[in-house]
Length: 446
Ligand SMILES: *Cc1c(COP(=O)(O)O)cnc(C)c1O
Image 1 (cartoon, rainbow, N blue to C red):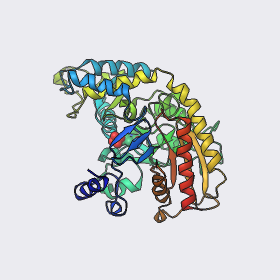
Image 2: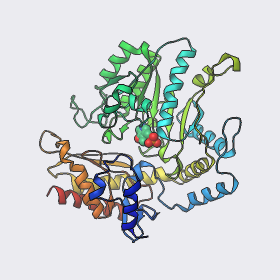
Image 3: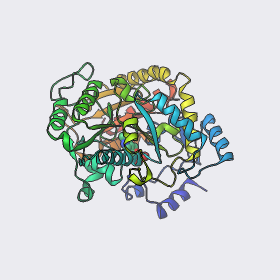
Image 4: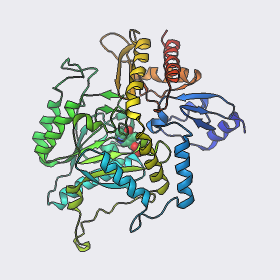
């Protein structure tokens, strides 16, 4: 079947995510036939470098032999089984290993099958926890431009108008504070070594309304969908203290930033913070299958523990909870981390940053180059004073189209280009990726 035929059939039947389908008339989708390492190939041998790890999920490359083997071996035993009253060794091993790797104090693991579901689980657990304590609080506090997924509860605590605005009438009431904005810092502070004066908004809100709030939910250190915004660990450690004082849970949504993207396995480690809920998904299976984990404390677990008749149980489930194939992949993914990955990524990340700085900095439309761990972002601006481009010009999108022609899959967030490649990328591939993106920028903004 030719690429052209597949594109035609695709257009006749498929509604793609996060897309205006009319765009597909001019730009039919890249039809992936296979993937190897950082590359995706179509049936006619065209290839592109997956600079976004296929929406932030892939860690160790496409077609990874170790993961393929783990998947095959598990498939021979059992692919999936009910997870109430039943369990299996893969889930048990995964839960034990996650607890050992997570920040101290996290000891109980609840399984679901995607990131949004892990968010819903944490929100419901926190709410019910307070109920069980006879406390009627019911609000959640989050950043005004946070991203936590697409289901209605996750959208409610998210804040990006693009995804949530139309559904506003359906969303539960929440409390929002501005997120740390280091690129346009109103206090004129550097990100590193900063004492987070911007924390005052969060602090004031918790002091004033803490008694109504079940939990604060944030993306630690890196707000992905908001445009790869980065903020210092100090903010997070101050948030932990303020939550403790207000007896409010802290939910660390590490769905994107966890599994090594931040440079440490979990971003919370960099602030020496233990959240009450740690959310893990995306990279946990190496980017092979959907799986998510909500990891929580003995205190939370204990509040739900009692005789059946007390009605305290957490009655939440998904059909594919604890999927055995996904658990086997997650265990194998954790094995792969044992092999010096974070150390190698420190070198790889610095190389990537340097490659990006040397090519992008100084361009009149580049407002900032920033990096956290294995994520390097380039924020495009129209002109001086960090003035953004008019959204309707779709500048980032134009760069994306040109980069794809050059064999690099970027998928910018508005006008923020970013590089978030699988951890197996070589220096040569990094240069190909960054040169392709820089060339595309030149095509669009000569
Ligand atoms: C992707 C993402 C989610 C949602 O995960 P899905 O699997 O897409 O539902 C939640 N929070 C963050 C920070 C994410 O990046």
